[in-house]
Length: 130
Image (cartoon, rainbow, N blue to C red; front, top):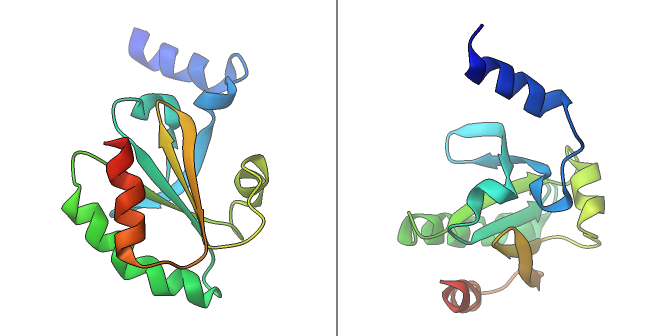
C-alpha cells in the first residue's frame, strides 16, 4: 500500500483532533466547502468571517473583505463560514451575532471584530498581526 494514503486515512478517523487542529468548513476563493485546519495555517494570519446569506451587514462588508484578500494575498488568508451551514463551528467559537470576524494567528484567536465596519478598521486589525 501507499504510506501516504494510509497516513491520510489514519488522520481522518484516528485520534480526536486537538482544539487548534479542528477543521473549519469554510469557503475561500474558488473552493466552496473545503476544510482548512488552523494548525496548517500557523505561518500566516487567517481572518474568518462568520456570516449568513440573509444578513445585510454581512453582505455589506463582503466587498471590503474581497479587496483585502487580494491586497494581502500570500500574507493573509480570508475564509468565510456560513453560520447556517456550519452551526457547530459557530457554536465552538461562541459566535452570537453576525458578522463576526475572528483573526487567528498561530492557530489561536488573536482578535475579534463584531458588526459591519469600514475597510480601514478591518485593515488596522490585520496589520497588527502581520
